[in-house]
Image (cartoon, rainbow, N blue to C red; front, side, top):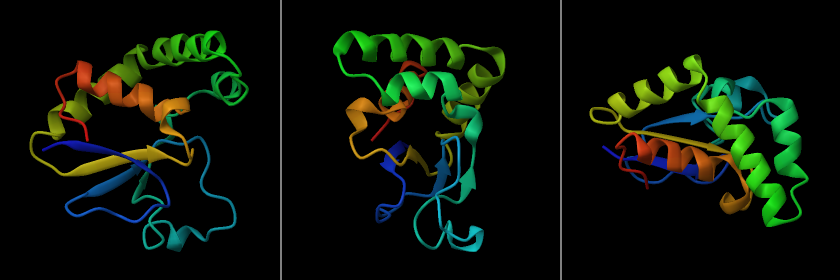
Length: 128
């Protein structure tokens, strides 16, 4: 089954399955009990979010060169053993379970989820 890459807080698509929040922090001002029902996420998994230092690189990226530096730093973090094993696990689970993952950023092309999409595809995952 494909993994869907989504913007957290957006309406859920059909057959989206379990929604995983790959963000450093929970949504502000939202009660924990509302995370799932308000379409944020079902499971919070910050281990796939950029570190605080790397996240700041992405948030302040004003040029393609800056974005390339963020991409390199995030890919390096995702190559660490724990993150790499998590990506491998998600790739294996994607063959039997519907799931989606995402972040709050409005523009995917300037969000770590665009890189997450590529990392999953590199592991043979069908990504929507």
